[in-house]
Length: 137
Length: 360
Image (cartoon, rainbow over all chains, first blue to last red; front, side):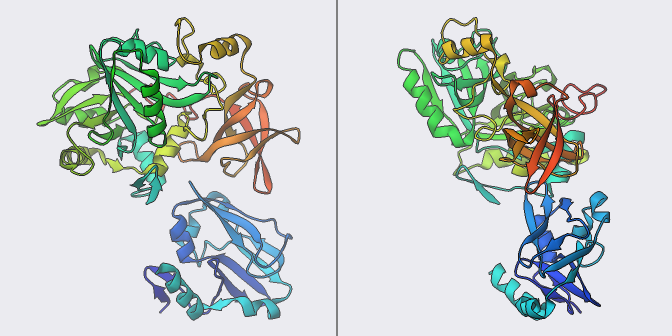
């Protein structure tokens, strides 16, 4: 059973940031997306600004954006490294981020450059769930 | 919910996209009671309004109305407004929520030499907008007058069931529709307004009427090419720069700002408001730079994603030489540049959408 905070799903086995990104370790790479809370807060996502494959990203710096009709939210890189893959499906179906934030609505795959150090700054699912509770008070 | 000019207003009920689609395809209802409303009456009402506004008030027959602006002596827009002649000697003025105090002050300050009464009724008369191609069918079911006979921008007193009010054929969406004003419905005790709101929702059920929030209101007006005061027009823009020259009647002998506006009308405005549609994926937003050959030539004043045309759209000001329809510019959105094309208003296909559409 995934953790749930109010209506927001927080699947176990992922890492999270306080900026509401999730990170899934896949071999040497990190698959990155935005959380259920992030997509529900933005509501109807109509555009995702993706970086190019090969782009270098730095932890805590913007790597792109997720946009609703009226709002723009930065997607911050949870780890530094190189973009290996971007979710091209989002160009035509940005609503996948709303529909499956932890699945087909993923945003990029990054090959991390200094994961050992940077992972210390990330939250596990329980840590993120607790953080979310404090945000919702 | 957000705070807007002192009111708590929802940004959306169901979602901005379905709310926009409801208005373009069928009907939506907006609570716009935050708007400013004044009734201006007396012997000199027409003369006074002709002095403080730029459009031709004397030309309005009873039951007719128009879009207009009030300008300061420099031709800068104090506010954009609707003026409607409800009876022989009484005019309704609808103005922006954020300008309520400023406008009333301006009206009162300029009324001294006129025999007029300016009644601020925003707190006593509620205001709803029912917008979309099916709006008239719903209103007709609860209204004693033939609403299809009301001309665009016109208005009249009506009974809505046993509740008194007036309706105008106006709106901020580009669609056919009405604004409904319920009398004796003070903010503290809005029972009559609630009755009217519920009646419209009940009669609208068969048309899938959708309550709409501020988000859809802003997107719909932008798709229609209409200005948002504070963004697209301010006291530093003139109606000619804003491409609202059609409301400036230079034949009138006296109105505030006349000298400047007549001069500008003759010479042509140097910077003008244009519509911009993004040719690349991406959404222009207010404050984005507009570039031409890597040089910044203007700024976006409003931008959004358009659910009707399914692309980024915007308006902004550029020098006259880049303002022709079909001109290409770039819009700097965060760290990217979007290709964009200057377009006319509205942004949508007027044979399919908007009050002039055919076949409805």
